[in-house]
Amino acid sequence: MKPVVLELPESLERMDIHLLGDWHIGDPLCDLVSVAEKLDEIRDNPSAYCILGGDLCDMALRDSIGDVHGARLSPMGQVERVVSLIKPVREKVLCMVRGNHENRVYKSTGIDPLAFAASELGLSERYSDTSALMFVQFGHDIKHGGLMQYTVYVTHGAGSGRKEGGKLQRLADLQNIIDCDIYCHNHTHLPAIFPTCSYRIDYGHRQPVLVEHLFVNGGASLSYGGYADAGGFKPAGKRHPVIHLTSGRKHFTATL
Image (cartoon, rainbow, N blue to C red; front, top):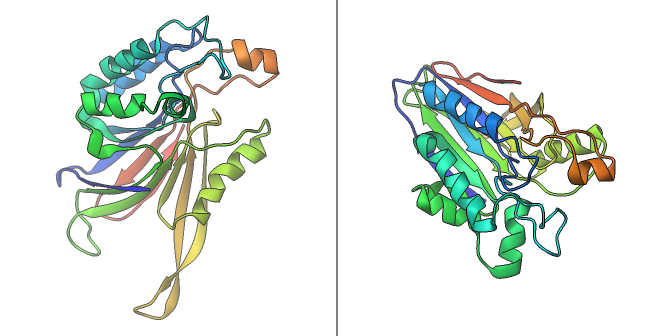
């Protein structure tokens, strides 16, 4: 788990953080048009930022799931396309994590394609090959003074499953790892949002404090067919959730 501290402008009154990932660039079913449109939207919105949750590249290998013979781009071509797409919004990328598709290459060769992309984009300090704990600071905090701060745990995720309940349980289980405001998960191609509450111990006042948590699951940018069609999986949801943070008083929500 890599801490990523982000001190953003005090003038920001709100942030709209787009959870992106599972583009699978190189797969012939990758919807590059929707990927480019979303990045243009982020570029043109002063309050918009993004999290890149892994599997940006497809990286089908000879011995892996996926169609290595039908790939539209070579592995290096996939990395180059990722860099060219992200470059116009690189200042708005809060963090990047490695997905299981990029991990195929690392396991086979010891080369991390997303670490290379992050280096090319000047984002190495915001890149993690496992998970990231973001401290997002901006605007002002009326109650405590100084900058408003939110904590966001980001991981690509792992495991498999066909049912929505199992996929969402994977997301919910992240709370067993760390206590924070927001949990972001990709991998399962199921756009979803849900809030929960828990009690946090206030040691100073020796009492429990009720706090909210927000769980956000990312979608994918894949049209239906290929491996999913042959395996009887449902089509992937192409919506990408947006997390909304406010300055002044702490408040966080998300929309699809």
